[in-house]
Length: 453
Image (cartoon, rainbow, N blue to C red):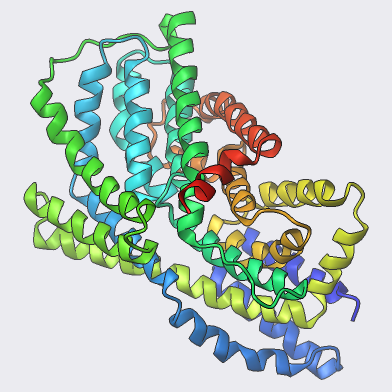
């Protein structure tokens, strides 16, 4: 088997997804159809599909993936309880009198929301609904306002406890162990979701710092684009009252992981419980809204796990048609060695980010290329952070970036799509700068996890 059929399978799935078919059923259905034809033609061994029940049972028993519904519930509760709305209002009043103050407030609140919700779409939509009207009314350049909101919304991709990092960490952990076993190491080292969380802290904070520096520079060099806004005074008690709940929750979740007192799954339980308590304390979560939050969390969780099952079917069929061997062969013969292979993979993932969500890319693409790259000596934490920021950049890039579609869906008609596209370009350049810094200096992602072990 030369792997050609596996490439046809991958291309067919990408085409169907571009046409709008459901991801989970496209992955599983197309793969099974190819497998059935392959069995009839004598090109596919049905024994590969015999491993599917064990794969599904392993998914059900995966302790790490239990964190996914808990983190989703935490984020949805914070969204429904209006904690984010109150925080943005307070921060806008605190910074509004300064040049670029509203933009600074949006970035800071977006950072806290990213660390609280971990879901890109939810952050972009929330910030678009809450802050875009205020920024436009305050005289901000529409392009700058739109770009700030889109870029800040994608921080949920990289700032822990990101759902993307939870899923990516689990996949990379399996890929790392597979790479070591393939290399003849029968006592493999492990990499955890907690390691990926810690590794993402410095790159995530660097992105936030560069976003803030850009907005401050624009406000001073071109004051008309980011003017100061007349706001009502805000007391220290109001600031503390708005900041304390999300900061306390983030400290409990990330602090317990960093201190080694809890696994990401246990910390997710603490986060979900903490979000419920905060909503109850602020009297902003009546029973109908709580029911809505639980149902929304269930829908997202079911979607994630259905895609995971579909990806498992695809992975087995792809491997059965010799696709994995073909990838190994390509990477071994690729000019530039590990540098060339990594560059090609990053480019492919960037382009796939236009048509696939991070969940599909994590479950479909990373298991294929991850073991090969890790066998070439790449650090799994560094690779995971590079993939996360790469996807974050892809989600911002016109004309297909997901963040742009999310904002377009909630922005007023007066905000032209071209303004959104113009506004995100400086932030894309900032993210490419951080990617380049990570490439040149990998300790930016690997130093902190090693120091805390």
